Image 1 (cartoon, rainbow, N blue to C red):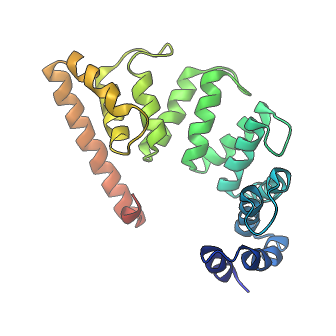
Image 2 (image 1 turned 90 degrees about the horizontal axis):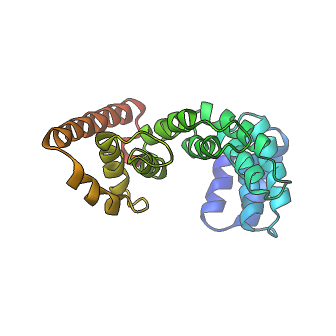
Length: 220
């Protein structure tokens, strides 16, 4: 049995069959299989729901370097789900995943930095992680950046930057981005609107180039 067979069983809803395929692979150290077993326990698919069991499988996968599992471990530490709540451990695991390019981890870590949970409160660092996630197309991060650059939470107001991020977020239906755009546009000068459109075009052009280079254009 192999991972492809396991995933096909999972896709067909044969969760017990998928588990039987993933278990020997996971025990042999395959981090993807370990993460999938964590998902089964977290969602109660083919097994009874067990956050504690899910956490242990995610942790094994995370320790092996799987960034998706690292984000899950960080999130579970932050929520106290399946393990005692520990924001320091949450931040540590989220940073490991974020450094590997996991956008969910970037967003979650930014939240901790903004609130000063598990790390020193640092809005500049929060903005950096929100921006990295937003540049990768993470809509909630884009919406958050738009909100912040409207002059919230101590961030210096920047109408052009706020417009860019809110526009991108609104195209993904994120939060109240579209509602926030209306009053913002009314405040903008013609020059600011022109600059905002220029930056939007540049961002979209870069995203298209990145997608073409990685062969993932159809997934965005």
